[in-house]
Image 1 (cartoon, one colour):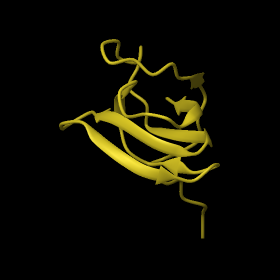
Image 2 (spheres, helix red, strand yellow):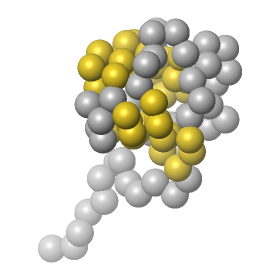
Image 3 (cartoon, helix red, strand yellow):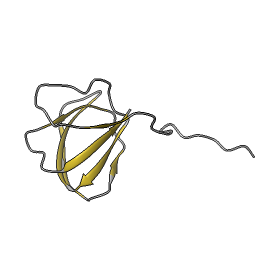
Length: 82
């Protein structure tokens, strides 16, 4: 049986995120990696802001994201995977 790729796929363009309440990511992220845990306030591709609470260090958030908002975000070392 051949190996099938999932929809997440391999990230070819990881990008360090600077949270901002006004500036979107240059390209929407397919998922985020959280280097140091905490709360993350994101703007998904198809919806209003969502705050993920107590995201652990080293977690992946598999949600399409156009912006990581500065307000209510205290997690850090966030990497967007495009």
